[in-house]
Structure formats: C-alpha cells, structure tokens
Amino acid sequence: MRSGSLDRLVTFRRRKTVASKAGNERGAWEDALTDFANYRRASGGEVLSAGGAVDLETGVLTIRDSEDARQITASYRVTIEGRDFAITSVALPYKRAIQMTVSSRLAG
Image (tube, rainbow, N blue to C red; front, side, top):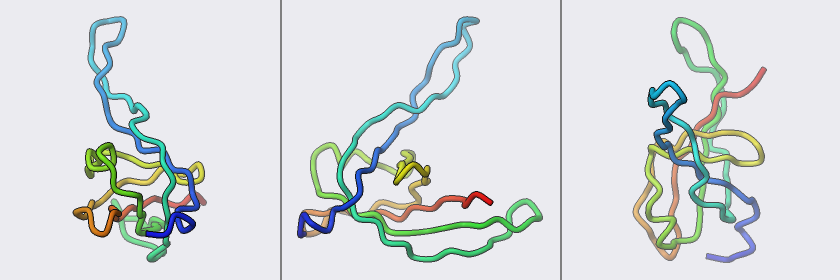
C-alpha cells in the first residue's frame, strides 16, 4: 500500500462502561486509535428507517495493518473529518492493509 494514499487522519473509538455518581453504569466512548487512512465513498441515498426516509452514506475505509488496527471490530466507531461513522464490517488483513465498511447518517 502506498503511504500517500492514506490522506485522512481518523480516530477509532471503543465503548467503555462508566459508573455515575449514583452508582449506575452507562456507556461512553473512548479514543482507541488515531491513524491515517483512505476513505472512498461507496454510495449515498435515502433508506427507510422507522417509517421515514433517512439520508445514509456508506464507504470503504482502509488503514495500515498493525497490532492495534487488528483490535478494531464492528463494535467500534470511527470519526472521519469530524463525522461519526458506524463500522459495519471489518475484513481480514490483506497486503499490509485492513479494509472496513462504514456508514453514517447525513445531516440535513
């Protein structure tokens, strides 16, 4: 993989459990990995959700293979240029890279 194609700084976040002052547990996101990646938009359009149309963008994110990158699963989230994306699938490492499918609801 050419390093020049990794042109966006992205942050992967994982869910952790945090105790509140009242002793209740709730989920919170913590930064797990910040790295350079390549993002290619695959599609955009409207899908039906809860009886209404929702704008949705999907794409493919590629990062360099590393020990930390191999910990990423579909339970993580990723921030690309200030937008949060859900990771819908993570492929096995291939040619020193890991590709994943991501999706995000569009504002508007």
